[in-house]
Figure (cartoon, helix red, strand yellow):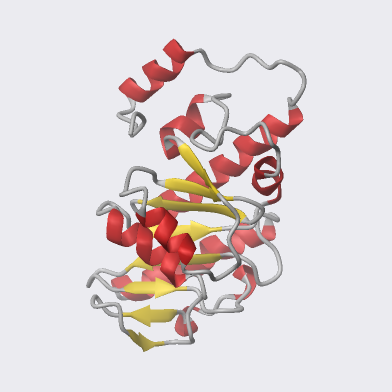
Length: 216
């Protein structure tokens, strides 16, 4: 099996896993991964994560031209913005995961630091998560908002919509977005209970120990 064929299978396997565990439903969410030749594989528009076909993934060449597969997700400007501003990005995942969306609806959430520091793992995998304002689905302004961050964030939360995470590869991106959802769920479960979050010194220790992008 070629490297690209293996990547196609992996993208579909991971997407199916996210779907089967209720992290994005129906035909929501989209996923992309960098191919060995510098192109992209992207989930098609209107496709369900539970039923992606490896042979029908949208295929872009390294110049950004669609050269095969079905028409891509309408959120391509969002994906392109991460690839263009983060040289380390090898994959981008966008979900409509319930707890992350619910947390984005709360007025008290800090837009510059969406997730509270409840465990070390979201810090390690995501760094700071930026809460972006509401945009209509498919609005190219979402990509412009990500570009405005100039590569300083690996993850954003689209208010009333869903999280978007870039990772070094598709497995890392999926693992990180799951951590985002789990941390949002913890935040909601402990809301109003005065949970013992990590202290600033503890956060700094995690950041320093695991070389996390944090201060930008």
